[in-house]
Amino acid sequence: MEGTSEVPSIWLKNTNMQFLSPQQLEALLPFSLLIDGLERAFAGRHHTPMRHHHDYFITGEEEKGTLLLMPSWDDGQYFGVKLVAVSPHNRRQGLPTIQGIYTLFETQTGTPILQMDAKALTSLRTAAASALASRFLSRPDSNTLLMVGTGALAPYLIRAHAAVRPIENVLLWGRSPEKGEALAAALENGQYSLTPIQYLPSAVPQADIISCATLSQEPLILGEWLQPGQHLDLVGSFRPNMREADDEAIHCSVVYVDTLEGAPKESGDILEPIRKGILQKEGIAGDLFSLCRGEAAGRQSPEKITLFKSVGHALEDLAAAKLAWKQAK
Image 1: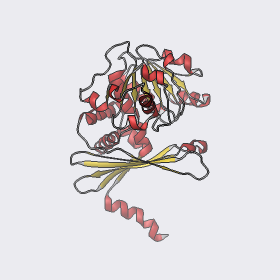
Image 2: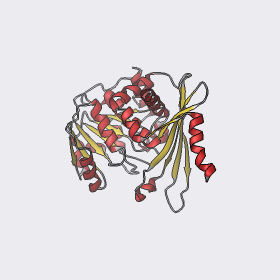
Image 3: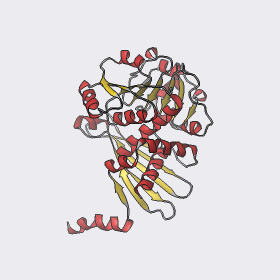
Image 4: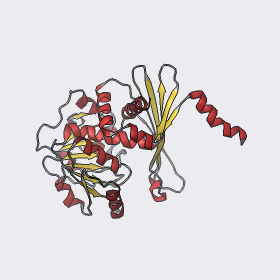
């Protein structure tokens, strides 16, 4: 026991690596700063391979777990990798669905300099990416947000969207009314009202922005409910068997994705409509790279329905980690 108790202190002393708690990370990365940081990253040049997906069996569970490995690096200063385990059954035990770690390295020596909780990093950068897309795609006067899903990502998405648009009203829908009530109480503030709702079809037409963060395998948002000028933000579907919006919602929208490399291969919300011929891959209007570089146009009309589908990208993690390192120093 004596030998094992000495290992952590020696290891930390030799590597001089810092660790940021979720609370420290959130303090260092306010959305006003992080969204701008992501825009600079997507406008710049980085190297990000497709993330590795590895499904694994969990004893006693029908649904598999997923191990994600997400590396990214810039031209000579830093590289980083995120290791994430997605365990859907954790919800029954009151544990986070997503758990993992992110490590940032200095390129010159390969020295690990910073580690942080992957769940907090993922929540922050995912919400910031949605808000960045909204900056290009939602109407500038959007003041009502419908949040579909009351899980861990919901409060981040609400705060991020409110950082780029004058949100005054937030409608909350989830499968558990109790969670909606608890989330509304936890986020109570003077900037916007929070109202839990139980009937989704009547709430969708009221919203300017609809943000979905669920693990649903069946569409929750139907195209027949959508109204001219709305912006639909789909975050939850990261597997081919997951859907948050139906085919009609895809058909009636101008579709954008976080990356043209990842979203058409990973998300059922994009993969299935392409397979059915409802959406052509060439018909996707742009991604965050082309939007931030000015190569693709954002919203062109106040009447169009825009749709943004994200599956996550390791560049977002690297950009957020580098920004946190700079802020911490």
